Image (tube, rainbow, N blue to C red):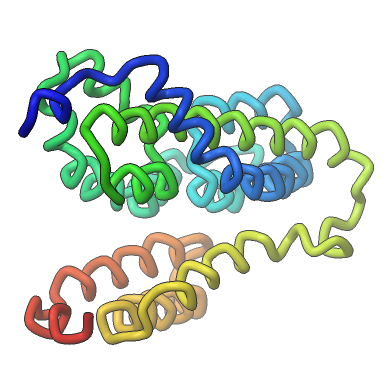
Length: 237
């Protein structure tokens, strides 16, 4: 590693990371708006909705936990769903560790607070260590900001939307997950885990208690992906 590559990230790197992620992060506003509306429809207050988005910052997990929200909240299933959906962050953090290992522990973990799929993928695409950290943190700030703007808009106008399905807001989460599937490589390394997750979730919906399909589907897809032979994965790339 060269001296330039090992140089620490500066404010300029964070600003550049924010700038590079800003165009993509604008799409997050619609996602955040849909969450704000859905949260109000589920009975959360505006403050609770904003606090969840600000402190959790995990769109897919937040949408999933809304299904469990009510007068009594089943804590164990809620934690299990959140862990299952966000388990990919373990691999993302491990992949990014070489660019964090020279940082003090406090800065290292603070840099991962706003880790998401988009800023991680852009940071892994190349550049010096400082540039990658700038994208991870600065890009994360851009994504968090637009996520909060979207949630705020959903809270502000959601109470006036009596039927979110008229505007397609109830379908945004499904469209988001579908885009993740069709936008990736169409090979067995993708189709097998997704197919296993879908079949397991449908079976759980039919035969297991309510909301169990989220956990069962996530675990089934993850297990199939883990057991898929490495040679098969390499051959389909």
